Amino acid sequence: MYQKIMLPVDLNEEASWAKALPTAVALCRSFGASLHVVTVLPDYRMPLVGSYFPKDFAQKAHEAITEAQHEFIRDHVPEDITAQSVIVDGSPWEAIVKAAKKLEVDLIVMASHNKRKFADYVLGPNAEHVVHHSKVSVMIVR
Image (cartoon, rainbow, N blue to C red; front, side):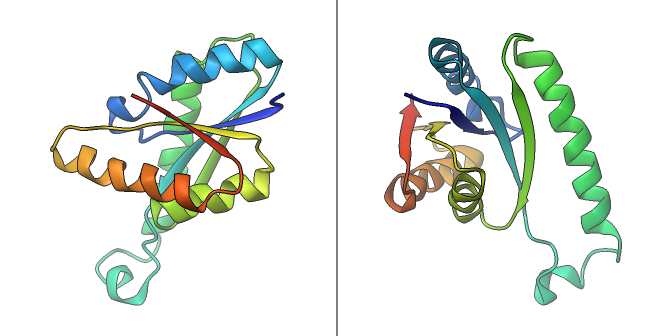
């Protein structure tokens, strides 16, 4: 049923993947699917925002996130699961929807949060937007 499963993760927020990752892994094993771990890097190239950062900041941030995501996959994704590291730029929900289309995934598995910490507040609306705008199935794990 599923061949490609996407798991959006915020590497700085364990709640963004702690419950969703085991679900995604179980689905990958059940269907023989590959796992596409997606991390969104905020777009620092916008003129208003970019002027506050050094010239090579976006490139260095991208390299650091790539290394951190590879480490995340090594540490948390079982070896029997084929995993791909994907880094995208932009607003979280838009980048996730665009990446899902580009990668041609069959399912997006992501966490939803009810707490009122700032990070959880940001993740909640992103999950909602992904559900409303994605052309593929989205599984929200609570």
